[in-house]
Image (cartoon, rainbow, N blue to C red; front, side, top):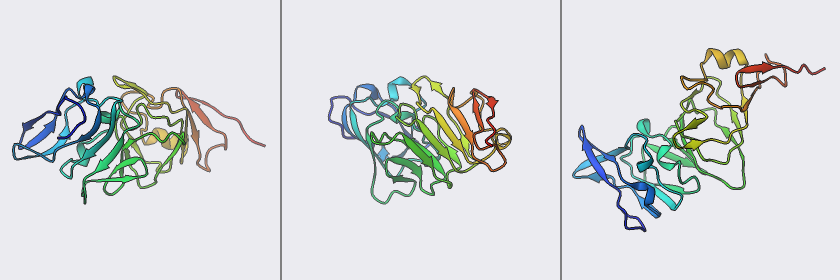
Amino acid sequence: FATDDMYEIGYYVEDNHAIVACQATWITGNVVIDSTYEGYPVTEFQEPSWAYVFSSGVTSITLPNSIDAKKLTGYPFCGCPDAKIILAHDNTELLIEGNVLYNKDKTKLIRYQNNPNDNSFTVPESVVEIADYAFTGSNIENLTILNKNIKINFRKEDDFGSHNIKNVYYNGSREEWIENEIDNEYGFVFGDAEIHYLSSDSPSSSTDTNGFMSLIVMF
């Protein structure tokens, strides 16, 4: 590991792989996650806990090739939304475009790291899943979703804060939103944000707030 602080990143072994587990809240500076621990590949972070969320003092986090994209969510980065995520050379699991972390084939959006000059973001059409905690603590207020069949795994508020999304522009109708079960078991994933349905089957200014629809027909 490598940090600019006295606190160490810890690991433990489970089922022939290693998991990141540490009192990371106090770590600052540049963090490098090891690729192996006691001969086992480091593949994931421990389940969400405040003890395992990097703090605002972290300026960068380097992820090794061994991290399993299928198991990675945005939660380790919730406390440091401005930190830079860096991938080890020739990473076969993960991809960074701009300030966004995806899996390699860009079907899963794992984490949006803040861009202070932009409060809007368009989720690429290739993305079929947005990971839990992907936007927690970010400055994004306007989110456009191009893939109408997307799966969203987060909720408005969780133990690590909340996202700031105020407007969602969905490339489909309200019926498709419901049919595809965009709102998950946590309820309305975007809280009190307005959902704007962009499908040609919907009125041009169709919106939905907290699950209740209000229509304004344009003449």
